[in-house]
Image (tube, rainbow, N blue to C red; front, side, top):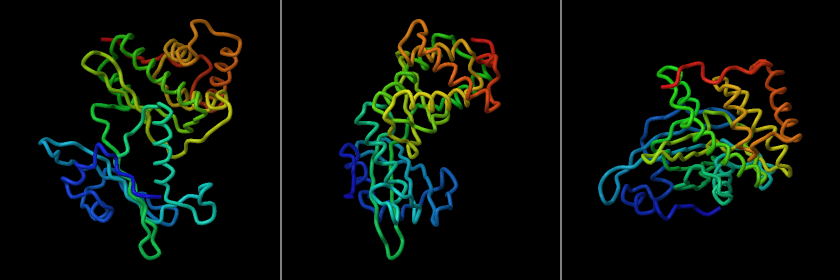
Length: 273
């Protein structure tokens, strides 16, 4: 595919001498995460600060990979860089109105026998993953329930929008859901790590998988807030027969995995501020 450059970022990349593949590939930057060596190649992420043309700075995440491929329906034999699938998912999520990362740059290149790819995204400034946020609450005390419910409402809306478009995330963990509380107390949310997303013909199939995954990895939330989130996702004030069946199905899967007790854990075993 052709090189993608976000028009909002073109002048910033040019100002920093990073508007082409070679410049981004050769950029010296510390690893934000240690490179992942598998699939016959490697893939790594760096956080880079760029200078703005009008002054000041901004940050991006620069992801580079070489011979790190997966089979796609468009590349069924030799496969394609995994970043291609991630980039396509980012674009699709955004077209569907699902808040996620903002792409800055994407391109692939073959150098000799090596297949290289670069994916650049804007840093989520001010956002904190729900996993890290809850751990902070456990140490320092949880905010009022109204604040927590404000976040849950936005996350449930995000998840509902995904499923209405047949998108199943497959890894809807708290560490992949980010939230930011704005000065006016409104909440913005984003979902990341979209590589394993799949299209499913049924919203129910999407719901069972993603709700189970979130429930399974949200051990610090009480049953009350879990139920509130569930009803918010379904846009219900009282559970219908279908909703009760879905709730039982999701809970039963969590219990079978041994991570959530049949009684369900108390949500946030800390005092509110």
